[in-house]
Structures are given as structure tokens and as C-alpha cells.
Amino acid sequence: MNKITQLFKIKYPIIQGGMIWVSGHKLASAVSNAGGLGLIGAGSMYPEVLREHIQKCKQETAKPFGVNVPMLYPNIEEIMKIIVEEDVKIVFTSAGNPKTWTSFLKEKGITVVHVVSSLAFALKAQEAGVDAVVVEGFEAGGHNGRDETTTLTLIPIVKEKVTIPVIAAGGIGTGRGMLAVMVLGADGVQVGSRFAASTESSAHDNFKQTIIEVKEGGTQLTLKELAPVRLIKNKFYNDVQSLYEKCPTKEELIDLLGRARAKRGMFEGDLVEGELEIGQIAGLINEIIPAEAIIVEMMNDLATAQKEVQHFDF
Image 1: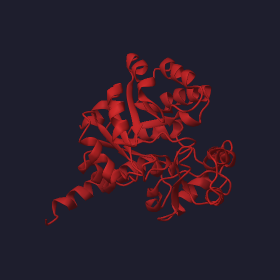
Image 2: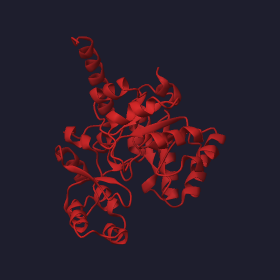
Image 3: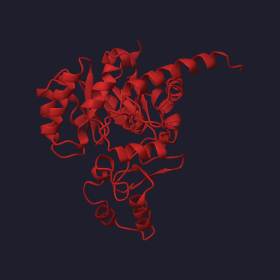
């Protein structure tokens, strides 16, 4: 066992990203049952909806699972209360100051992991007392770091300076990618986009189909003035770029974004006006398969890559 499998009491050091509109109880329980760590994405759930997903996840798996909580969302106090009441053992926090909730959660016996996009944030998270950090590179889908530091660069930079376990995220969807980041110092991986295109993902079928059709160069990081997000290039993305040509104010960008764009795109399947968040790894995703098959595929690919590396002639 490595640090991550020991920390979470799981078989494989693979964590499924707690993505908004994608990561419900079906996906989280399927990943956990397959030996990884499933995460429920609280960011797109009202508090009582989150409670329902936690309860259903408990019914569907006896294995460890967790909840991902973006701290910039409203109802954060109620969400944390529900997490404690429902006896959730693992919480991943993101998009906020880790000091805000880490002590509260740790006092309840909860394992806490914080998602970061830079060394500075990783050090702050360690100082706040988290048990591990997810170090997310520029390649990732969803909300991202403004500095555009790639996973390949970020992992060794962070690993050199922190003492807590490091989980790599961003651009990882294969066993070979997993081996690469672990050679660079990661103790495990968090995988988002690959699981978004799984059978159990709560994403709309239109969005899943679009993921497997995306080619290299088909996504772009944008909206840095609000919260950097990597989007598939559709009409909404093109509208954003057209607005940028006019040097928009922050308020004009907010007005274009409007409300519920992500729900409209990823959950309701509006491929034209919806916000379609996905990582660069989508260029390597070619089929929609069950979460268990994804984990088996990744672990087999990892084993093959390890054998191939042994035969390299340096």
C-alpha cells in the first residue's frame, strides 16, 4: 500500500474527481466499489439533495467515499453540517481558504484534502492541517489555476516542498499518465474527465457524447477574471471570445455567463448555449464505459507501462 491507499483505506490510489453536475451517488459508489475513492460533487447540489446522495451512496457501497465541497458556493455552513450529521469520513475542499473549515472537520474525525493549483496554496493547505493536497495542473477541466502551470511542472515543484501526500490532477486518464505523475512524486491521482464520460456519470448523454468527440485543441481555459474554467469550444465559448475582443468589464462577463450555464450544458445537454467543462485529456477519451472498467483499464495500462519502462535502454 502507498500513502494514498493507506490514508483512505482503498485498493487503488485513484480518486474520482467530485465534479459539478457529473459526480452523483451512482458514480461515487461505482468508483468506490471498484477499489478507488468515489467523491460526490456537492458544488451543484442544494443541501438536502446532497444529504440524499450521501444516504444513497451509503446504501450502494460499504467502501470509503467522500464529498467534494467548493467553498465559494452558498449554503456552505449547512453543507458542512449535513456532512457531519451523515457521518461522512472524507472531505475534499476547493476554491477557498483551507483554514476556514479544516479544523472544524478534523475535530469531527474527518480526513481533509484540499485542491490547489500552486506551490503557495499547497503550503497554505499544509499549514492549515490538511491530510493531503490535490495538485491540479492547467490541463484540468472545470475551474482551474490562473497561472497555467502544467501538471508535469507543478507536481515535482510541490512535492519538493511539502511533507503531506500529493495527489496529481489534470490531464490524467490513463495508466501511463498515472505512472508519469507518480514518477514525478505524486502518491496518487485524481481523475475527472475520464469518469465524466462513464456510464454512471450523471452528465447528460449529449455531453458525454461530446466528450468522446473532442480532439486535441478542442478546449480552452477562459474567464480568468471570474474563475478560470476550461471549456469545450461551442457557441457559448465563441460568444465569450467575441466579448473579449471588446475588452469587457467583469460585470459584462458576469452578465454573459448568467445563471446555471454549467447545469444547462453538462446536466441538461444544451450543447449550444451551455457551459461544457472538460479537461484536455478528453482528446484521449474515445468511449463511454462503466467506472469499474475505467479503473481496470487504468491499472492494466499502468502495469504494462511499468514493464515497458524496465526495458528502456538509457
